[in-house]
Length: 378
Image (tube, rainbow, N blue to C red; front, side, top):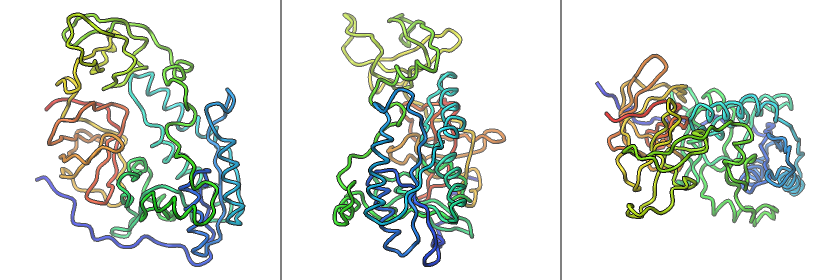
């Protein structure tokens, strides 16, 4: 029998005692700035920590660490809190970047932000905070926390446009037991107004986008420095050869740009999209049209599962996302094999991508998720 997640009966998340020491990840952006501001106003002993996770071997053209550090220091000065700096580049390389590269080499498309949260911000960072004498950490994520049956559970942030629970779903629930998300209840415009009213120098700073170590350069150029690409045929779903690809690792499902097909006399002019990678033949397969059936699948298998709070009984009905900012999609989740889940969606999903993450929700609660390894049509 398919089960729904029981109705939420959530308790409040634990809070530090008055005056407790809290280390806040201070990135030099407006969100972490206001997180530190709110903690300071709440009366905690606040320490800022600026984390450097990448060594700029090609200068600071792409990674703005020096500028961000200066902004973080300016915020710390304004709030009269100490700022510590820590270099986690080696840990980031070992736990995040090497996985990032191996996934691309295997033809999958990883999401390093998910692993950065699990391995760095809610692992190495928390351990570092303990060394500073703090049992609590805080970040500027748009998410919230509660308890269920005595266990921490993760909730969406109140601002649906900024909610970051998708990127936090792989963090072990126990890591949230002494964590604070001061921005969880607030919309982004309120954060900027609060920062400006408090005279924080980051109040108008543009939000960072993308991955620091890639920055403004072409992604394929960056990836080619680390991943070998072998040219091969580019074919239509009907087997017609349309050109040459530069290496399967440099393409992802649903990709439109960079295919080099151009205009064709026998074509209706609709754009082409990547729909499959045939690794055995080193062939990239494309289809024409945004809604081409080859772009859609209604079933996937995921592994590397993490449940936050009490694990639900399988099979179950819930909603899921296969990418950040996607609207919730109704689905049924069941056991595929030990350590693997099968997710059957009510409606077919466009560009299901192995290497990405499927994240499960029941209303406001983020249940957890896993990494997509297969996709199919049931």
